[in-house]
Amino acid sequence: MRVLCLHGKGTSAKVFESQTSNIRSQLSIGNVQFDFVNGPNETTAAPGVDMFYQPPYYGFWEKATLEAVLKAVDWLKEYIAKKGPYDVVMSFSQGSIVASSLLLLHQKESPDQPPPFKAGIFICGASSLRVLEALGFNITQEALARDEASVDALTKQADVSSIMSQGAERWKGDSFMQGRSEEEVRDEFQGPFKIQIPTVHVYGAKDPRLGASLQLAGLCESKNRRCYSHQGGHEIPRTSNVTAMITDMVEWALEFAE
Image (cartoon, rainbow, N blue to C red; front, side):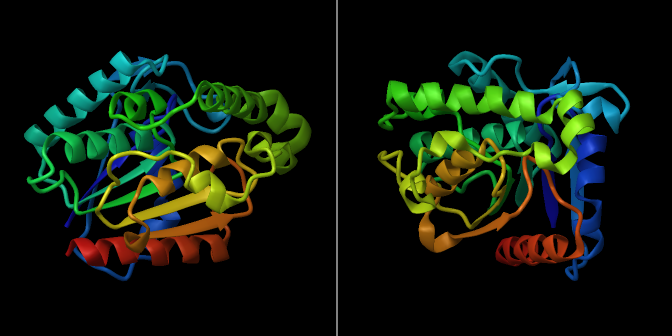
């Protein structure tokens, strides 16, 4: 079984490999090959990343315009055509936007063809609101503004000064959920279809991008998804209990893909 692994903005394949090492080491399913790939564009480090990991750093775009996201999706299609096929995609943050955009575009353009993956694992994930808008989903200007504000909040909470002065206390959660329940946020975006493959959604209760992760979960068929909220921020905590929970969910996705 082959798993394609897509990292977050301003990190790298090596960073994502390190971030998921505890999870992968505890898998009971054998014969799983994880392919960690660098994004197509070399860039600066994401806030706080250069404290722990050496360059180079990569990303899929600098500004998340519709054109930039579609270009990244085309790059991913070409990569899969050359290096694939893959059974599962596992992604973090910006990598999840690329993966979910590919799956949604496939659902729109080729609904009668097998999807590019049999299962998806999204960690601190999100979707592209511009892609959703182009696909016919109802995306309000308020939602677009809220999404941009949550990205700004993540940048501030994850930077070096916040890490040095506040440590784990720097994560303040998503104030842009504005008192809405998780269920309300998951159901916010209504459109003509959903991602049908089994999906796993892992997100942090204190992540300023929590709302974006919940919205992505809502774009996936409810009967085929599993969700887990840890108590951290925009990260993959390495505590034993969190690792065990995420590992269990990853195994669930891998079993579907076998």
